[in-house]
Image 1 (cartoon, rainbow, N blue to C red):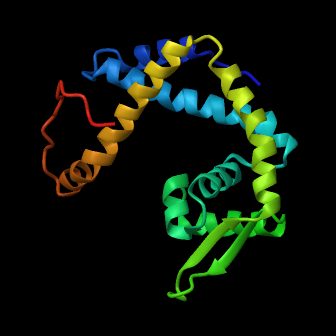
Image 2: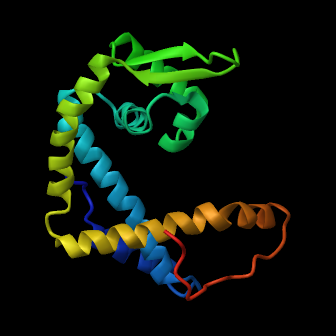
Length: 190
């Protein structure tokens, strides 16, 4: 379902609103388009392949994380899925009630909960992921394989910037200090 305003219209409206305000427009456009792309892809996948499986994006990501990493503590699954532990509790209970996920106490620490896919969950992911991947191919159809690799590399560098330097930046901002803009020409480790 296309949005009522195109990306071009949104960019023109933002430019008109900002007028003479001194901002880094290229960086603003990059981050805005990361968000727009993520939202558009998520909405498309939820309304196509995931709807047929009666799954939300978050539920699919939880299944994916446990499928790829194997049995995992809930705190690690929440972190990898980018959700709170409270959200994970509700999602994992729903997936457990559908027979896709098993929740069990940690053998040596009763405070921890482990998540594992059931046999049905494993079969489900083997069946659904190829359809999910077909939609990934659809949303990137205007890009060549080389462009997909390049985009993945560029986005990986954005993630690494936040992972490696974000905490220090947040502390600086929270302490009321003025952050020093850093833009290194170095390419982060992958």
